[in-house]
Image 1 (cartoon, rainbow over the protein chains, first blue to last red):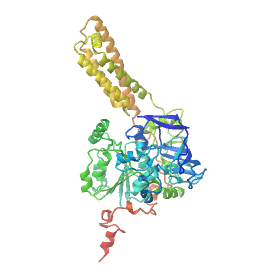
Image 2: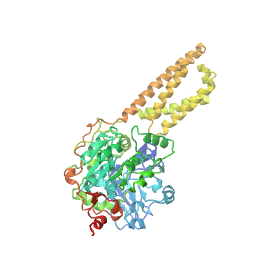
Image 3: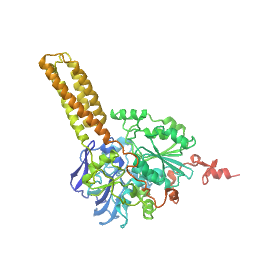
Image 4: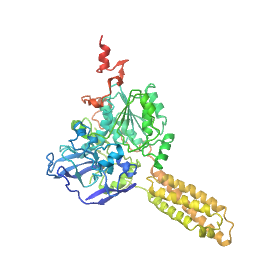
Length: 390
Length: 201
């Protein structure tokens, strides 16, 4: 089959690879009908996340049709249409039973690596380094879904892929980013980063009833899309003093809730700490650039909430822990517990409350995938979200 | 309502696919060139200095070789070669300045130095073209180039959709503790235990 394969830094190719096979009785194989490039895939493309090996298949936003089912899998049958959550979940461990699916205790088959990297293992992920299991990803013609009897979202026919695909990651991730804020009708919510997750977080905050949503980015078309979704926007290229501006917009008190939809590759033109982060990252003295987190901590109203759906991978520096502690901020973060929200979000899509396909700007075949990684990374061609149809 | 995109995806190329310039490939070529030149300066320092009339400056040439080697490796290893290509432009200027001070050898050496200077000037032009090209590749589009103003994702205006998911019950593990919840009109917000306490005589 054809698949997008990681070969090294900024080197992704459309290769011919062996078809996946059933390896365990709970598995299923799907024929991929749609998949997408995620912003967090760019951390692998740029090789900021450790743990990739040449030959790894990319992709963790995938849906398709079941074509083969393992003998112990009683939940699925051939012909079922499913969206595949990016987190692999056993559905049986203590964490899964509590709904903490993204920290499933059993699905990371490289548990020792996960333990070393994070203290305790987190869930296995599709196409996202050997720290999270080294599972083949879904930017391919076929995908083996491990523990498929619990790692799936069954979806009805009659709704196009484009409306459903993002149940795999960015819609529930943006949703959880907003839910973690426990949004009240009096809240001003600020979202940093207007990429796909940020766009979903903005809409989620609106649906959940925020009084006001403010979005920060520098890419004009992303700001335009955020504005279309109901956000007031700030272009940080034009307004470098984000903390001052947000304080001005909130009577000097700061926003109650802050969402980081950026993650470890934050940058800001001219900001001293951002330059410092770039230099330290280039010298491998830190892995994560936390410019956004610094701003969030400094501007958030005391006793406010910081929600962090943006992906971080390792070690950061110059983290204002004093402000975080003294202001009594609540921090909520984590990879998304997709299955916890998928039923509710599917209903909202079916009822027409939201149509997540608004974010799609490019639809291509697998062979154009490598070029689209670069287009997406460089924010060229108006690119906000790439869907691939194998 | 914003649904499946109804207009063609924005593209720049006539083929309907995004078009990339060749500057990244040029950067890769310059990276390999930098490594080759660096190795030559490090491993064949004496013959090189003799040919160019740079006798007595062997250590300087070795230092330049180390610089070339490091820059070349950085260009090839980095996810973004742009700053390293700009670094090469600076190195080229240094090379040309050094060469300008060394036109005092015999006629043969002067000719060799002239040829070398012309070659370095040519590579400098390539470096500048590459650096400016890479920078242009990453330049953001001016506001209004792509109109996404119709992409709300909602069936009605965002204002009308505010609170449409009020039926959602935030799980208890994601709720903010009552003492940290926002106040409303100078009092604890309705529904919190603090509000209940406050209303208790």
